[in-house]
Image 1: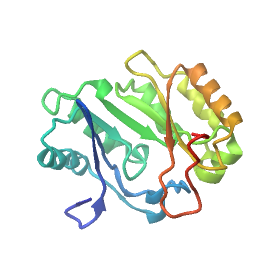
Image 2 (image 1 turned 180 degrees about the vertical axis):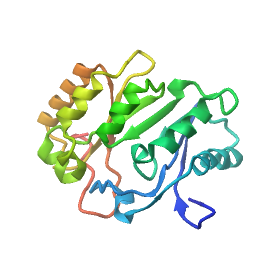
Image 3 (image 1 turned 120 degrees about the vertical axis):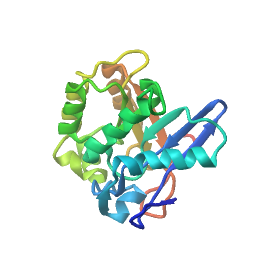
Length: 223
């Protein structure tokens, strides 16, 4: 946890795996997307972080850990595409040779499906990896756990992603948190696979981490 100059607490996560040091950073204090399984959603929304506050998370972790940072993921607190301007500004600074000089495929920005900003991101030909927090394969289930699906449904998101200029080093990633009895059926697996095949993208299946709410992690056989 880091404390901003305004006294707000934000969370960043440092993850080291062999030669990779990935840092998961926040883009907002809290979040107003209200995903039902998300601990941050319980907090509600307070404010957007500035570009400087986003970058400062990287600086602080680089001072705390000896291993050089190799990857940045915007998957911490908040919805990055509801703070689009500051998030893109910070990513550009991290990518710049005058900043951290991270390669474009070393930076990933995640969104729960803010369709107008996905359209803008693609239209602006942004170079960074794009991840979609999908978490369901049918609209009714997704609406129950991610309310914004009522406004921008799965088909709308997938149709837009077909415009994304994927290549071997820059594929869209579909993130899928497994929730016991909610989105973990064999039918869900088949539909998720079909989405991945259609988009020729990566799929990141994430077993749920218990936060003491109504949701739970599936058993190992189901995972």
